[in-house]
Length: 331
Ligand code: AFP
Image (cartoon, rainbow, N blue to C red; front, side, top):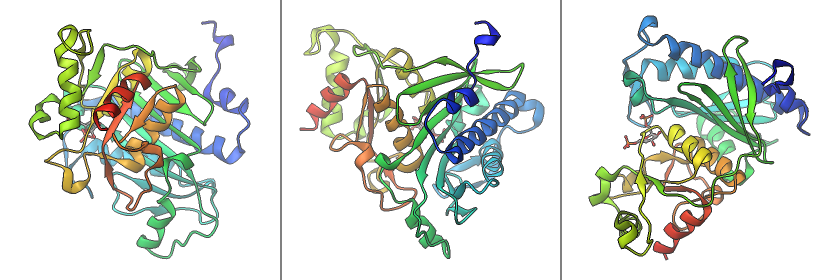
């Protein structure tokens, strides 16, 4: 691609009918992802691998890079007055920033971080909601209330994936675009636009080691996939499980498939494994904007009304016809 033909993220956003404040938020997020990519790329050389020696609100051991990536995202969006508050997987409560800001920013700063020490792709997931005009930032509980909006209210969502290439997948509500980081200029350049999930698939993603804990509908759906051409689906399937949601979702956006992380007997009390506000919702917006579907098995993920900032949810997302087959098992 001739460099003069490059459509940078800034140019892509300038050609969208967006408020300047939202363009600014998205460019700040992209800048933070460049910094995180550089940090991750140094790995052991920067002494940033391994545990941070503390747990997050989820009760999960934090990696050093979880904390550092969180700090980078906070710093990148703390100025400019565009973001009223931020919420993160790594922080117990929202961080108020600019009370008159137009947007709320939510993120998982380093998704898949249990893979970081074995050099497998990880990512940053982000979601942007409108800030309520009458938000009360006087206490943690009051601040949390401002974030409790369904995924249908998102004005933008996306992820960066730190793999062989660093890519940024983004939607502002009219399709999905994918940008590749040009490391010579530290600029994201448009490499795919109007992404569509292939209708047909032979790939499914689930952690099969949890099979004995699944509820009957998921057991039935996966059993039919495993029966392959000898079963009701009459075709063989392949399985992939990266254990980085960003990597599994990116594969689905690229070559189709379905991803499942259902509520099961182990995590039922917590409501599931994946978090609604900053994992399931942004991914669901991307998948739907690319022509796919995202469900809990019983309702659209984007329509789930959140009760708590860090609440978890059952996730089934991917090619629409495949998600419909999974929903049929939940009937
Ligand atoms: P970490 O960020 O703790 O590595 O968890 C990643 C994740 O939230 C999501 O990205 C994966 O799809 C899922 O967990 C993997 O969970 P299992 O390790 O139970 O397969």
